[in-house]
Length: 405
Image (cartoon, rainbow, N blue to C red; front, side, top):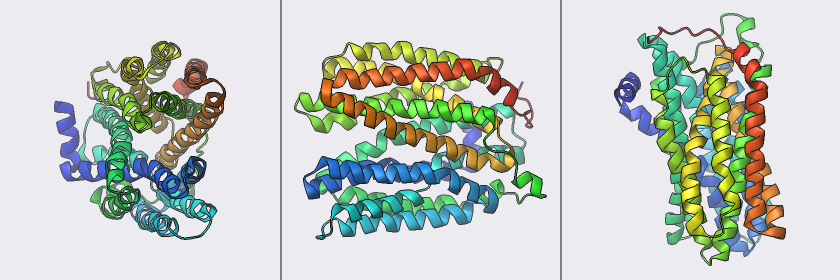
């Protein structure tokens, strides 16, 4: 805990809270749009299509916005994103009750998704410059990445849960709250002093044109695509089980169990020895995931699923934290924003792929084929980590902060 106290002391607790709340709207928007459209049209297909349009647009646009943040600074970029995305969500709310075809809602959701800021990845970018300015040890940056991974998982749990609670007041309430939170906390995050500290105008053209898609970052994008497929397939399989049990509303709650285990494990990563290299960690975390995921093929009820998801989550955050930490290590400082958002975009695309494939298989065979997609995604995680290990080891930059040891 002392490491986290030192970390939060660099920015103040207010920033930590703002950065956390600023990422909640992204976690709320997809499910909020799906429930709103499905309630109005009576079609989960229409709701899923609108939510998918938002998710894909966000995944594709994320690295483009990351590039803009690297070039012009996070302050103007995130400010534009926050206000435009909040407006886009309000447009979705305005269009749904009209007589227009739901396809127009999908267009509005696409626009909102295009602008939605990836606060989590951008918050990661801020820690190293903040720590360097304070003369903090290098291990504190590793602590920051552990915290950010846990914060992302907590948002992943809280966002859908908040949608479920607010939906009791009406299907439009959750999306309105997401828009309001984005306008307030997204703007606050954009204008915070840490955004100014993070941005340093390139001294020459070479620093602004440093290569982004290095072999190492390509390996990490594939790793995040695989873990994204896990999220999509697990959510689908859980939904099938919950619906069969007559409790479809429990899907979000059970899916959140995956995030709870992740938060616990993510916050505990600071105790790992520095001599255990990041590529080696990625390999063993991937292996742990595959082994812990195998029981998914045996579950046949929600009661059996709950402990499996809770334990499986213990391997998810460590894996993701390691990929994002490596992403920062293998990327030139002038391109870190683009790298972080590219990894986040790969995760979103993986989610869409996993959900689509698992959904198609579930239509024919139920929850077990959907969970089989999770196992296959885990196999891809393991293969990527082990075969890409040498590339990741060679691709890391020397660390510039004071060694904590």
